[in-house]
Length: 406
Image 1 (cartoon, rainbow, N blue to C red):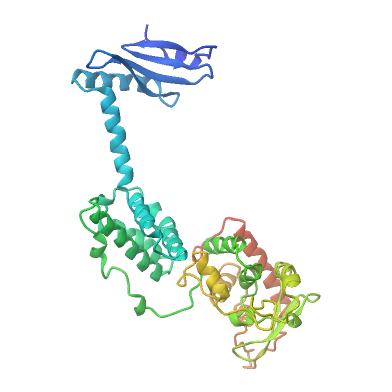
Image 2 (cartoon, rainbow, N blue to C red; image 1 turned 135 degrees about the vertical axis):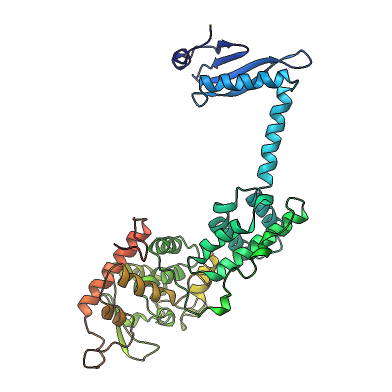
């Protein structure tokens, strides 16, 4: 008698494996652990009996197992050897995997790895894994056309990182040319996209900045996991909290920091005016953590070579590049644009408070310049709210993207 779905579902394990037959070679094998497998018994062309594993129950239902039995019997009637047919299917699947864009790209990367600097290799790999593989990686490389590649590149451009988009396109072209050379593609379709992206030189130059809240959270998490110098890591962590000019951060002096008042007072590098940065509790914690390391220097962030000089202007930038953050994605000045945008558009603080905290020239209604202590309590509150908001982004809180507020 043929099996029923109830019999299959209720079949219990025993001390030894046993079989429940459905007929025409199909049976369910129940193991002592309770696992159930569909198998098909058949005769090969040489007369030898063989068995074919079809799948596991309940992933493969009784109806699906019967359908597979019917298909197998049709192939047998046509003289097809089921074992050879199964091996051919496996080979075809493996061949597809080795000709996907991602497989060819990783092969090309591996071939070049020894001849590249490790940072260069990591940047290209990171670019592929972040922006390319999720969209075209699984597709056969010889099936990809220019419109598919352009759609992927447009996603990168839409983030405002045009230079990264150009680099990703160039890297894709290198992979396609490697595929042509190794016989897995007929041509390089990226050549059809010449002129499809705006020229980098045609755009007005701004300091690169990450301003989308979700991307800010990822950036902050990267800073926390930085494995280089603890002093550089502290500078990275403090930069978004205080959003001063890069030179002002790296030349911060312990004498200018008042832990009791939670303030940092210094003369700005651009306007040569006195400025106050209220320090949120998170900023205080970062500074106190490195004080045992750098307190013997007058600089909070001294040079690793001598405590008589402050940190190099390239220290933070080099650290970001080692983390794979490209120069067209984030700059040292970018923390100021980040704060200016989000404090205004997301947290809705008054623009004059933000501008004052940025040490920009802000004047009262009579045209007089505000002094450094203007709105200090409002700014103190703003800086703590800002720090708490950054913590929420870092923890992965649900955020509303810029430009999508109700």
